[in-house]
Length: 262
Image (cartoon, rainbow, N blue to C red):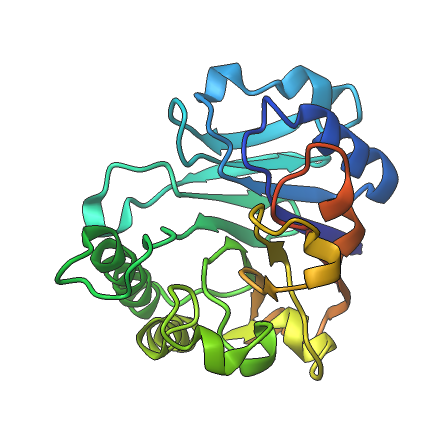
């Protein structure tokens, strides 16, 4: 069976429900994982997505902030969530498809503006969240699993527009990259996107601050698709839908997709 999974930080699922519907119509992934939904679960416009064939949803939400949801054409079992770093935030939800694949949908804290936990509490929370993920996956080694989401870190030099200029900027600092690498290693996760697209600049986020984001092209690859080693070889056709960043009233993130033959 072949199925496609997409991940997208939507930056308000209610505000951008028409864009979600457009993506579902044009790309028709089997599963769409959303982050930063900024909505209580009962306020997510699930009926809009159900009309397009996505009749199954598991989600965690809160008013105005954070929030994650998994939309699926197929039935999906709710496997719960983890509150890493005890932040009380809706940042993780997991589900299992009928084919036995477990999907983890994450929204890792952004970390604020200053890369120093001594003066910036949010940066410390980000590092603690990643440490919590690492420890949990070490204790509960995942199998036949896919991890997606806005991990808010661009790990490689070619995942940012300028490695040198961003070394001290939150999302690309060495300490964040190291924490992410430890998290990836803890579950033996394979970066599916880079396995498929091993070379060249690759971004999934462009700031709203740029007057012309496309021309400036100062992007970062913050959104990821990982898979456990037992199924990573089944992945192919990875892509980032850059053009979606140019839709009317867009999210500042672009969707990331991968297909699995399982």
